[in-house]
Amino acid sequence: MKKIATLLLVLSSLIGWGQKVQNIALTPPMGWNSWNTFGTEINEQLVMDMADAFVDLGLRDAGYEYLVLDDGWMAKERDEDNNLVADPNKFPNGMKKVVDYVHARRLKFGIYNCAGNKTCAGYPGSRSFEYQDAKRYAQWGVDFLKYDWCNTENLNAKGAYETMRDALYATGRPILFSICEWGDHEPWKWGEEMGHMWRVTGDIINCWDCTVGHGTWSSLGVWPIVKLRKDIRQYAGPGHWNDFDMMEVGNGMSAAEDRVHFSLWAMLASPLIMGNDLRSAAQETIEILTNEEVIAVNQDSLGIQAYCHSDEGDMEIWAKPLANGEWALAFVNMAKKDIQINYDWNKHPVKDDLSSRALELNKNIYKIRDLYHHKDLGNTQSFLKSNIKGHDVLMLRLEPNNK
Image 1 (cartoon, rainbow, N blue to C red):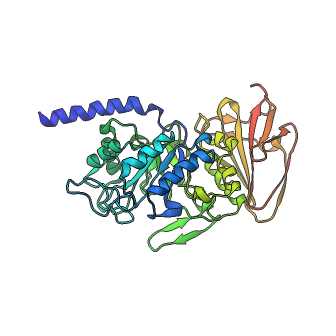
Image 2 (image 1 turned 180 degrees about the vertical axis):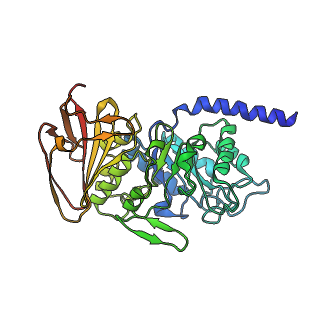
Image 3 (image 1 turned 90 degrees about the vertical axis):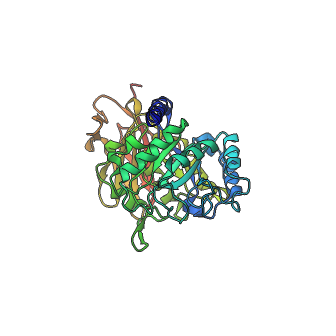
């Protein structure tokens, strides 16, 4: 009878959760994660500083809402009841205090753990403690869980993430579930059943086009990540997203390369998770991250991931269908030298076979909007003429005249 009662409780929780989560991640999640810049060197003051920066820099108003602590927040051992404990040196007032601080600024709080016995940095993982840990997070008021894949010998990926999904469901608290198993087990094929977003690559690193080896694995620059996965765009959509990793905007690339990086993540409908130190961010970095016109492309209600429309060596053109018959296009200069374009819209039909949408030039004249210079560039009756700097982007929004 006890087993039946437990099963009924879980089923009840699942039904209740289904009603509650219908509004989670209908557009790609936006926020900040500590790992890219700080690794395990995180603490209470950092969380409060970042929460304040969300507000002071206009990031919250631009749509960023999740402040996520990555690996290294917990003590090296569980307590006598096997509960996870925040590191008392890093978080002397406990985790609930920082969660409340974040919530008081009308933001949401995220936390990290791992499906294995230990996290990637060697802290206690959730293996065999999924329900206990999920309950702990709910008690603290956590809104987001990033769940990693280190030290997972003999575990089945889909099964492990299903267990934690059910544990989160059982708490009754809506918690965004971020699957982070690096794309090794094709999570795009099963992730929608388990969570709201899933990593499709290994870890990002702050470079334009490089691969940095770490022995058994490698970090990837912006373009290796963009090019790594083929034919997975059909798996992205409202409530379930291909995650191309936290962003490196503001972490050492040029401003032009940062614009390309931000533009591609927006076009790919990837979660926009910042990874820089907001306290020392340059004004140009903040302007990129808070560009509402680019963010609007990422947050478009259709949730269709962009495709590479044209790859002609030094120039790549990416296209993304938007709601109301609109389109976003990103002309990326892959070369270090400037490129002049004189683009004839009629010679380059834009059609997305996945969504069966097309740029209907025979029916409409499209107004062209430059999303970084915030100005109109005429319409599709004329050639598109522009100079694109090296490693920079011309990002456009096309609006039909029948709106």
